[in-house]
Amino acid sequence: MSTGKLVTALSLSLKQIRKCGKFSTTHRTLFTGSFNPRCIFQSRTCHLPLYYHQLLKRHLFTMKVDSEDFKSVFTDELIQLQKIFEKYNYEIRFAGGPVRDLLMNIKPHDLDFATTATPQQMKDMFNSENIRMINLTGEKHGTITVRINEKENFEITTLRIDVINHGRHAVVEFTQDWELDANRRDLTVNSMFLGFDGTVYDYCGGWEDLQKRRVAFVGDARTRIQEDYLRILRYFRFCARISPDPNVHEPDTEEAIRENIEGLSRISGERIWLELKQILSNRHAGVLLETMLRLGIAPHIGLGNKPDMEEFRLVLERARSNNIQLQPISMLASLLDSEEAAVALHERLKYPNFDKELSFFIVQYRDLLPEPLKPLRPYQMIVIDTKQKMKDAIFRGAELLRYQGNLELANEFEKWVPPRFPVGGADLKSEGVPSGKAMNMVIQRLRSKWKESDFQISHKELVQCIPNVMEDLGLKVQK
Image 1 (spheres, one colour):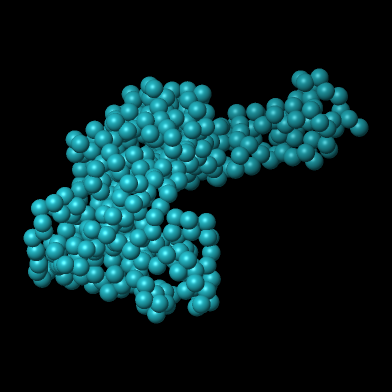
Image 2 (image 1 turned 45 degrees about the vertical axis):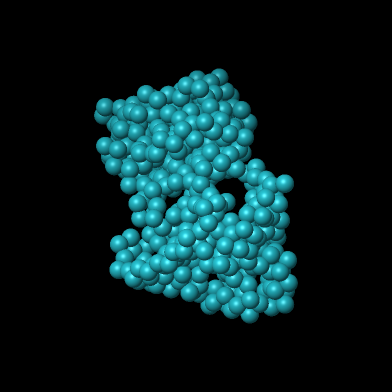
């Protein structure tokens, strides 16, 4: 029997069980949406035949949410979307992230939806209602995106099972079974659905894990990871958000990650960076990165076989003592021992130029020291000579100072307004300086004098220096 037929057979078995009402159901009404709700608890349990317990390892848990955050997501556009699905008798629910956030008393920024309607049924429905559909590239995986009233986009995905899963290249089969869709998701806290009436549908123990602040894969961790190795990083990202102690992980989960960490080498650098920068933006970034390094992630994300753990721990401790969060790329730069390593990391992760330039800057200048009498002067000299945007150069200088643990100097440096070099080409021409290479040589000499004076020498004084500079360079006045 093929994988697709096997899963379909399982779906039919589950449906037959449900028709008989022979599975455990728990219902709870949640008035506040908080982790310690006032609740009404009732349950109904019927015994299943012995072999069905192997099919249904979990029971459906439901409860009602009635929080202000939940009510606030119902814009006119969302209500219109709801009415369209009701009109055509297709079920639609919030899925994954927004459900998790609402149960954590967080107003969700992104709304994802799941539905029993197939992509074709959704297209027919939206065409009939003159609703514009956009970005149809997700259709083969069941996702249709619509724009209502030219104000709000909604992404709706058909319930599905992953017949063959290779990360983004999954072969999917559509279903109307909510539990099967829940079982294919990565983490239990991301596997819940929420009806428009406020009913939460939890097939995988997500609510219980959320109360415990436990981050766990749905079902077998190894299976979930091997379906998409990026789930390793998603696990750590949600540890950063949810776990009370991100340094503690269940032994079996750690072992599953260690066994499969090499799979990240098959994931594109762009996808890895999207997850990694979110992990490294969290206040627990250092602890989580150290755990990932202990589990062997370094060579698979471009950090080589021997990342500089001594420098990393030193930088991490300085950041902790100053109670600051460094840029994600600055954290990674602390693990690099050379400019060549910085180049290799960028080639692997392909992060934007802003991050690339910052990583190169950190690696190149991290041994720079403030001067005793004028501590900012070495950093100011670097900025003055930059050929890039002055705003970006000042940011890099301040980040370098934070990296080095000099928080007060970093704050002062950010307020510094770099002076403009007062002499221009017109001044040199009026003094008879030949154009081209000769003019550039004179400019560089004058800039050196200006910098040596701590930018205090005036325009008039610099112009008066031009004849002597030309004489030193062996240049003749051009008439």
